Length: 139
Image (cartoon, rainbow, N blue to C red; front, side):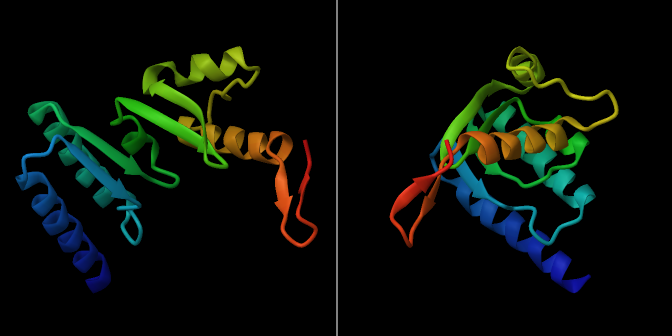
């Protein structure tokens, strides 16, 4: 429990230091590590309000966000092997992937579905580099 509180305090202080400056962009990497989903939601909700109020851009990387946290994002960037697979409004992402032949099941969370699609793309469409033989494997 103490570790969780320390993480929250660190994220809040660090975010506060970044926000005070004259910049309109904030970049945050894996701020949810070690936090429960409720705390992550509260932090993202606060950052969303800040982004809308200050007309700022906030870029946050998260792994497996809870559905309610995912719904707070205006735009998303999905990447596979360092390449952008989707960049656009969160509200349009399912329509985009349906056009590519991937339909989200009714009872599956959108973030979980997107992670599965990205993993599928990596496995079947991204070549893997064999360092030992210095050649590409796969398609």
